[in-house]
Amino acid sequence: MPGSDKNSFSHYKLAELGSSLATQDRRFFYKPLVARTMFSKVSKTSYGGEEITTRLDTPYDAIVIGSGNRSNPLATNEQDHLYMIRDEQTVTKTFDSQNTPEPIVPSDLMLMNDDPFGNALDNVDEFVELETDLAGFKGWRYELSNGEKSLAAATVVGGVAYYTSFTPALESDKNQCSLTGGGGAMYAFHLHYGTKVYDQLKFTTSYDVPDTAQLYFGEGDSCIDANNNGLCDVLTPDDGDPDDGTPGGGYEYEETIPVSQVSQFYLIGPSLTGEGAVNPIKPPEINGPGLTVVDGKVKLVNDSDTLGFGFKTQQTYIYKREENDSSSD
Image 1: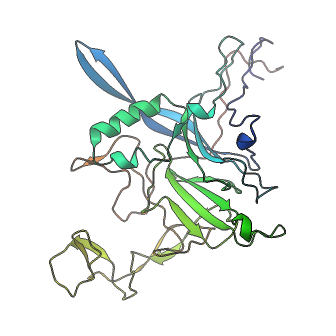
Image 2 (image 1 turned 180 degrees about the vertical axis):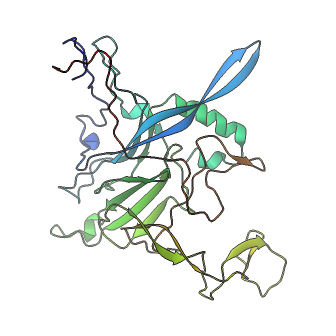
Image 3 (image 1 turned 135 degrees about the vertical axis):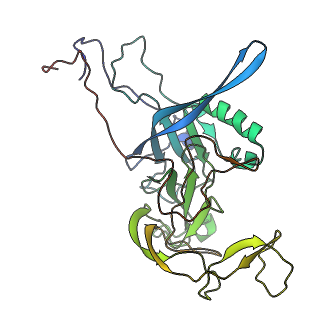
């Protein structure tokens, strides 16, 4: 253990996410995923009677995990959560009883069920205020519905946190010897802001208990072709022609570019179902860590059809040797 002082230590309890209450008896059956990344930490100070907003690119370890009692998947008593804990202690250091960080508890994590960041994309000032609030938290959490639980490891790809969940059937439909009747889902959150990066946050899967999403590199269509006519669906302003495929909202599809096959990254694992489901999923490119504003709106995702990843993340563990380390410790 680093440090020659036997009263100092480099390990401490990071978080306490449950309690003795039955509804908070949260279980973790899979190790967390740790992704080293950075975010634009926003703070506000007053100087000369004016409020000044500052940003500082801050490295942190994103600890991504979901709770759920896999040994009792049909239980509905616990209120399980999906977590992203932001650990800014990225350099190995020693602590003592006076400066050990307090364990992170659920109230230290910003609740994202009302999607505060997603609702503020059209208001930059409000979005920045939320960023300031988030800087005071230690990450974020998402409260699952009653009985819903995370029964597989979470993963992070290109700045997006993917979790899967299982919701048991209603009491009247339960078979105590089978999971039949339950439903699986996959969630995709912006790693830092805890908001959606696809058209929806939660996707229904074809598996009762879906597995972890996996990244692979393969060949696929260069664009979306919803009507399978061999032409890319390019969204353009509606010109009023009734013969065009009009998705609404003042836009239509201009289909002039042929679909081609390209090599790119995909996510496989939980097969998605329902209207608009696309399998496999192509991971988006996330803007960041700074704020990207286009025409007065916050843009979290790069709209161009690129193959690279933004908001770089690495699944890595780093140990930094301290100057006072001794080979005998």
